[in-house]
Image 1: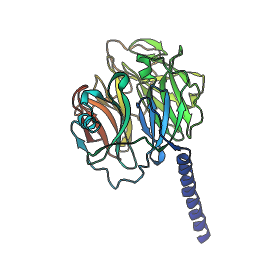
Image 2: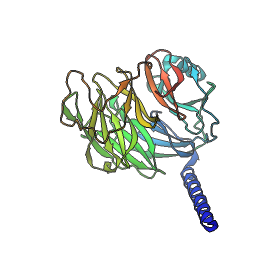
Image 3: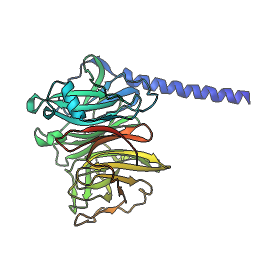
Length: 364
């Protein structure tokens, strides 16, 4: 019995050690220097406080070691009114000369990171800003940080489409998943890039059945997505404009493949999905999805593997179909959201072009 216990302890120690080595290997893959971002767009956190930044103008993903790895004792409630105005003031510009591009919470420290554009037009400069639970704002300096970079091939051409060259990134297990718009005929792509970075393959082309448009589309970019395991298989649940929700198994994302996703819900047209997260409440899993026109939706994930495919089925007149959802009427004008501890989320609330409030909400 003592021998068995000793063996179990040894195995547990080996697992902990292996985890430490793996984490150290990820950080060790970064090199000290100053990353030259042309823009700062989508954000995502990985292990050990590594921040991934999508550079749409440069068609690249940067992995940046923030060294922000002190675990928060608690995730204190946050409320900062006029957060965009306060960030602009801290950077020495007017609020109208600042654009908040994305927001991500460091799940270790609870600090909130923003990718912003300081200035307008060709003079705009990418900046990373962080905000703590007390509302203290500070620029995260990119000088002499540890980082690595991977460049994406065949990005969307310069102009309006280039701003959508990278629309969403997420770190899942040992890979970065990236939703991109390319300059190819099948423009909408998803890339699975192993981390530490080596090279980025050309990605898989994504075809979907757009229920409101009643046609197959290959050029519509994924606006936002989350990863979710269904029967032990990781899937990306991707939301598109006008607003189909599509399930795509990550095992299908092989370089050069043409992949048809399964449309599992139509959430209503004349709408742009903005941000989404997954969470668990009462022992059940949900998506929280915020939209430009249809507010915030709570979508149950139970039974998603059994919902009938909407592929080849039109949904006319702004109707909805497929996986059911409920509107969270208490949440209005949510522009962005992210998990904040186990039971809460951080939301960025307000009308586009106006003052924005950063605050904590309880997950519905």
